[in-house]
Image (cartoon, rainbow, N blue to C red; front, side, top):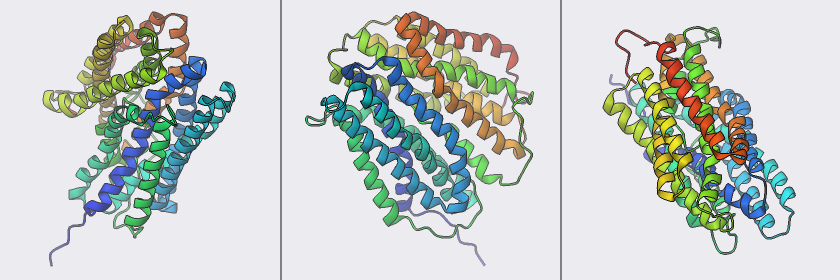
Length: 437
């Protein structure tokens, strides 16, 4: 008797795709406008940066919990929780910023309340991605699973492009710079309705766990997310936890740590650099539009490296890390030395291209350094490394930038240069001939 192939209908896949895309797009849209809002409210740059650090910290702390809870409470319920956290945070943050911009709240009070409501995204938004991945993996045969997981995971990376691209169009006459947040809240409400209406909470056919997804930024790594999800859902056996000090994986984790700090600082400072170099502190609406364009260029460069260069050039993990760090350092220096819009776009795009090579390289290198039974543990480690970079580094970068711009950009380039010099000898081929990504 022939077996029936099981896959998820296209309308349900569209809902799952939207859940992932909206969570990433809303966050990167906020990244493109918040420096301009801070300038308009006359909030010190470092406090603006700390608003993202707070959210990233909560994401890193809560993501493992929600990944486990999706197996106990149901995947659809956890998706809904994440979307509710997202749209509630966007709506409340948008209303708070609008009240501050209108003068109804003092600037300091505005950002304190904003940080409180921002915690809804960091604390609950991380529930959706692992639930989506586990839902897909539990309802597809192995033959369709890789393609389906790659599709929903790529939506997370695609969202990082869409967010800054469309955010300037939502700067509306009545609500001003708070418009993108309010519009994304409405979009999130539409996704929640579609989720409740179109997605059945049926009994899964296969056991599966969702991968922990890193905090969404314009440096997202969609291919890596798909690979991590595939490894975790296919290997459900309980294995002793992999130690952080394991000599096989430690060099790759150190590479991810230092490269991640540089990337987080680049993303944390770029909005303020644009305001200063283009003299837009007194024209924050225009500054938000310019920042969105630069972030969009960087996101496209990231996708080009991960969806184009890595498969085309058949890079090994070691090569991707070393080449990525070299390009990242060069692009960082170019950005720091640029005083016009064209130069900033070229420099930031080059840096993003490099970091787009580096991130999948370090993740794949760590994965290939250990056997299959440790893939769940190493995936959790790489997700923690990726997310932790956005807790402190953006604020440190802004502090140094306010002291002297080249102090910040010199440190970023220094991280990249050190990674190239140290990694040349410390990062060993995973197997003879260097296995390709």
